[in-house]
Length: 282
Ligand code: SAM
Ligand code: GLN
Image 1: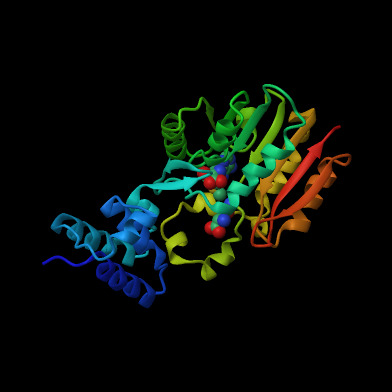
Image 2: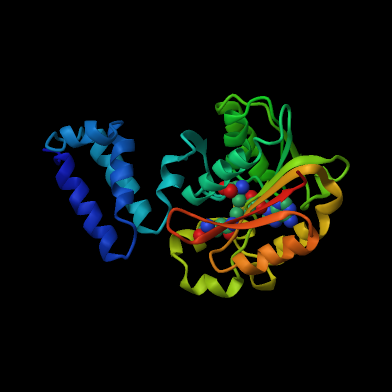
């Protein structure tokens, strides 16, 4: 006899709980294994798993119990209503970053037509692909220093059927011979010392070159504020994601680099400082 869905689910959740891991991951795993989501799964909670589903569910739960992110087991994450392939080479796109895309789309409406957009440190391609999907006439370039990440981003652009110009290289190096209307980035911004307090699911499984930055996490903002001024069009926009305690420092860096720009600190839905927008020109 195989287990009913809800019994397996409850057992897996309490095992995860007992290890201080995210119990919701069991729900996502069950949806993946049964190929039923949300309401459909709810309606069938008393159904038994098939023997194959039961084996798959418990094998993958073993993986979850090592702290492995459920997105690595399932192989995908949803971002901005789109599906992205993820693996150990890219940051799993976060919901906060959807707000950076939304804020950038709103603030770049004043730049009409085929605006030229660059996403620096694209990882899975999340920001570049979501922006292009919402504004198809934009000419979007996405860069990363990691070849393995760019491979994933390219696959994601194909899966989501958008055309993106991918370039490899350090910071602004791959975009420095052109001028840009919009530059977006969610750079690494966590200070190395913070790794002690972070979840093992992040520290042990996500790429450290996507998470950690020198200079109390400010390294990339300092570089961007230094390198971007000659690359921006007269009327243009910069949008970066930040750590929730970095608002005043990062806004100051950009205000100094662009004295005439409107620089704003924007909060995420949880009320935490999460983005800096720098609106240049009229
Ligand atoms: N943009 C993706 C997102 O928001 O989900 C990934 C962001 S992740 C926090 C930062 C990305 O920057 C990683 O993909 C990492 O490989 C890349 N990166 C790290 N150092 C870099 C550098 N010096 N130049 C360009 N990209 C870099
Ligand atoms: N928001 C990510 C986390 O909390 C960090 C992303 C980044 O450093 N840009 O793990």
